[in-house]
Image (cartoon, rainbow, N blue to C red):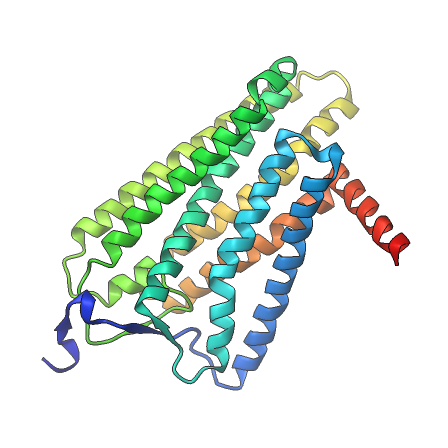
Amino acid sequence: MGDRETCNHSDVTDFILVGFRVRPELHILLFLLFLLVYAMILLGNLGMMVITMFDPRLNTPMYFFLGNLSFIDLFYSSVIAPKAMINFWSESKSISYAGCVTQLFLFALFIVTEGFLLAVMAYDRFIAICNPLLYTVQMSTRVCVQLVAGSYFCGCITSVLQTSMTFTLSFCASRAIDHFYCDTRPLQRLSCSDLFILRMVSFTLSGLIILPTIIVIVISYLYIVSTVLKIPSTEGRQKAFSTCSSHLGVVSVLYGAVFFMYLTPDTFPELSKVASLCYTLLTPMLNPLIYSLRNKDVKEALKKLLEKKSSVL
């Protein structure tokens, strides 16, 4: 019995988030790093949301989706970062059972929604470049709202299934989650239950999320590249590609980080934590930077907003 004593999931009242296994004096450095990155996430994504909402020139489907992307990035990083920063100063590093359930549910909801939203944004660019005369009809306000709502619906269903199955497991005596937030894989390591069904469901859900979204993105861009290469002028080709380069950058950062994390073996938990950092904090920080630096409309809207503020001051 001893350390391997089994307890029902209903007996667990809290967990301990181990976080990064570093010397205590490095916790201050990590706290400051998390604080800096999180401040940039708040500033960048809130700024992007304000710009897309209030600048009339950005009242288009592409920027409607971009505003939603910023909303998602802001909230799923907010599910992770504040608790991680608190734990750098906390002795117990505990998180309640309900808090752990909520954290896993919200993170899964937003990260899956982002995957579907990126596929929607690729489809939007496909319609804009390959069928520009039908763009306003095929990407009407109603269709855009439905596509975003559908992305959230898929995220919600996936999150409910993943979270409910994870927390119906029985956990062993150890309550220490070897991670800086509640995630499925480190929680599975604490379980005394048979994980075969959960792993099969997780694998199936991952396939149903990743494969369709990647297929939509790849096919959309194959058609886009084919159409752009037929444009006679160099300026026309550059303008068409510039509207897609930001989106491709965001897709590459997110999917690269996700693949890196899930391809990391369980025998290297510290490497898995570093990979998790890439899409929990670095991706939400980089997304508004990628769009603001590579998008002429966003740069002009930001410049206009800053000029208004300086004139008021």
